[in-house]
Length: 310
Image 1 (cartoon, rainbow, N blue to C red):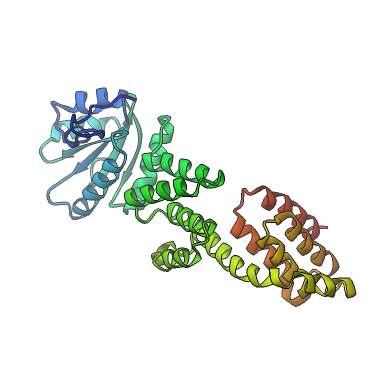
Image 2 (tube, rainbow, N blue to C red):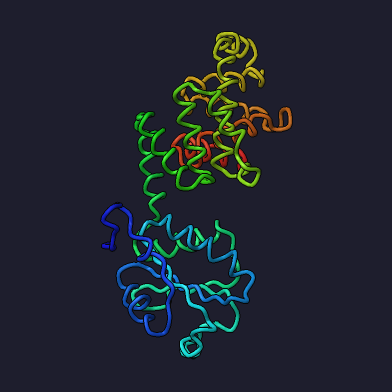
């Protein structure tokens, strides 16, 4: 997807990304331009209070997209004829702010009202996906996750940090950076990073997952030292559920995820309700730490459903 760029910078020139439009430039800046990249049209007015907060937020998201989407701002009071023509096409421009997305010369989507930046970002991400693209940060995030999976910790560290530089409150980047630090043995740094996470992100699945992983790492170190004791207790009494759960924690710390899950499933098979379903709760904590798409999670979840719905 070609975009006009500033000769002194690899990113598109700001003047090409964000423009003030009118009835004379609408065809070129919106309809024709949208055949190359999606174009957002921000219909606003000087008397509109919400516009004063929405427009800067849209501009921030558009700049972060680095030329993959453009923004044209149109003052409805200065362009009444254009607004009337567009209203005849069914666009609800009687109230502002209204933001209309154009792609391939056609209206692709719209929203009204002052949305928070996070929702504007989701709107743009959906638009880019429909256009066959994605935000630059999404590409970096994919590269960072791949680097972490391949054991390239330094590369993952740099890539996750790059995403956070663009989007400081991206929960996947924060969690990915914390997981990378954990993989590098820098647990204190990972905990320090998570301690700075805004309250609104604390319950995000990725953040909760890496927090569980850190807790399991600490528990696992202690459990590994006592693994032989747990095995001896189980040999003497197969119904020693606490020993079985502790053994699972130790196995998880040794990266033996399937074996760890198997111990918990065995406990469930013997007594599902023991200690308020402690084995099931421990297994769910594993799932949270491993992630929903981890192969061990998928396999163990099948086993869990067998025990719960038999």
